[in-house]
Amino acid sequence: MDNTNYLDTIANLCVENGKLQAIIESSTNGIIEINGEGDILSSNPAFYQMININPQDSDLVNLCDILSSLELKDELKTLLEGDEDLLVKGFHSFIGNSEQGEEKYFEIKFSRVPVMDHFYIIGIVKDKTDIMKALSNREDFITSLLNIIHEMKVDNRDSIYHIASLVELRDNTTGKHLERVESYTKTLATEYMNTYEDRDKRLTHTFVDDMAVSSILHDIGKVAISDAILQKPDILTRAEYEAIKEHTIIAGEALKEYKGQKDFLAMGREIATYHHEKWNGQGYPSGLKGEAIPLSARIVSLCDVYDALVSKRPYKEAYSHEKAVEIIKEERGRSFDPEIVDLFLKIHREFLKIRQEYKDS
Ligand SMILES: [Fe+2]
Ligand SMILES: [Fe+2]
Image (tube, rainbow, N blue to C red; front, side):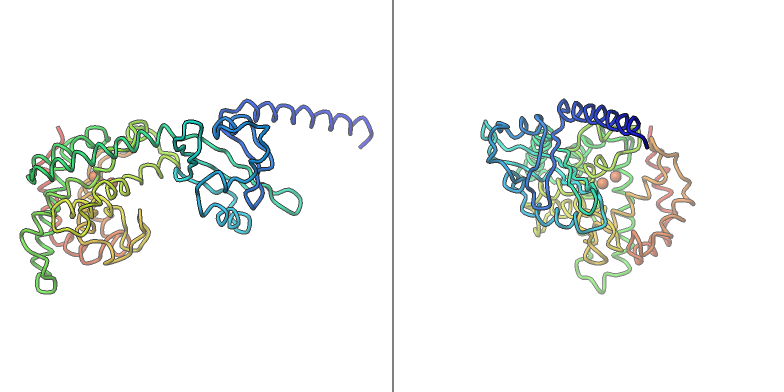
């Protein structure tokens, strides 16, 4: 390469660098460069604005001191040593000392950028405080509703149904999904009771009735998920999918005072928290495996999935009953408890009858 070519290359690099700088400076997302210890090597104005710190304040040097995330240092270490090039810190990072003294919530995406024989870590920081506030307001809202039911001892199906319908109205699952899930649950749980009552003393008619009524609450946590995500007609991004998954944890939190009690809301909590767990441990939110998943959640999970399969959704056509049965059979021992699948295969025609009885209008 002659000198003119070198100069051209350098000139081009300078132009590209200038463009990049302009983008970083004007971005509304915070952009930071840190080392594996969390020391901030450089950052853009948006980041300083988010954390209400004057850029001249050079005392501010370590991200782990700003965020009250205890595991951040370990996670950065894993990122530097591991195979993954991306680490997403969800809504859980926050700081407590902003100007107004209120907590702020950040979502941070760290990328590992290789340079020669080492790595830089670049973090893109988004302020999620407003979203988190909206979420916690909704969480308070659902807690109050459920407390009202409890305090008034209005433990009848209609009251719970009305509250759970609030979610279904916002979700894309319209129609008679809740009635059907309740009815499938009653049928499958009754079959389970008739088969296994000798080995499990909990299996009574009251237990089965409680499970059927509580099944209505399975997606109650979606009250706290934003419409933008819940009603999105397109395929969800990874972050949006992660946000939807929160509906299980939110329900668990909202109903935490009923944990371990002998109350239909305690069973509602179990179902709402664990209905996305899978028999093989690959589900969420806790990755529970086998019988560690509450029986109520194992039964309702199959009923909920069956109804989703035979119903039309924005992203798919309705499958036939036969195809749904085939899919559930394939998931025996994977998504579902093998014993429960066997009982379903015995009585699946009952499911078809329920499906025909409660048609979506
Ligand atoms: Fe769900
Ligand atoms: Fe559902």
